[in-house]
Image: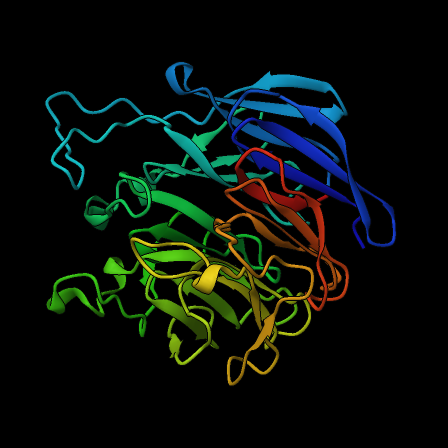
Length: 368
């Protein structure tokens, strides 16, 4: 089980360490004052990677081999826009061909040391073959004619936020875009096809409701031990697939809500998944001011509402798509919120311990 967490926030990167059972403490605060959009620890190499968004000065990537020893690395870069070519975003403004934010960072598979995948806003997918020293854009996805149909979701620009690498074959990967649905490549990014039949978007023109490219996937995960099973937290609800994302079934009637941003799946039990429900659309706060986690252990036929240790009155914590994490054993969970709350559970979500409620807004939480 992991005894450490990386917590990316609006004002720094925090390392959380387990001092004793149920006792998690802030061990380090790095990049204080800077906007850290995402960080993770590559367990193959031991490197920690952090993506910073400096606003006016842009995105910067850093890598660390030891606490406090960060070095600046190269940043994923978009190709030059062809001369005379104009591409507009959903608001009619020129769509930038530049890295606005890093929104996904993942290992490239146990058989491919040094390979990393990075997803960005406005919808780029990049690969590094040397632990982040350089990046190459996956042009076959960026140049796909349907890519220009992608739209912004929570952000004004499309964002590629989920990357799942098939544990059976690391050249097979599936990515999710908000808003642009699911895309699958069986050959290391050379060819791409759309997946996600069965998902439903109720906020688009009726003729697009079931169009895979119109789906606003908030988060996508794949069970490591049973890769056929994928779970999606969608803008429109919860969906589950039993055929590697080709087809999805919508799960309805989940209390207190099917809306939310994150989902995690148990590493060995494909029927067990966790969600953090919110009020849908323009509200986006916990239902009734109660922060809860919902869990299914039977593939979505039923759900439990987990509350012990979580604030149950006047709680307005929103948990973003990368701010719920599960360790490799499937027992320890952690989640951080927009109001600076951080909680850990050591028993699958049955009970939660508050680590802090005074952190900056939390963007992402990852076990090390």
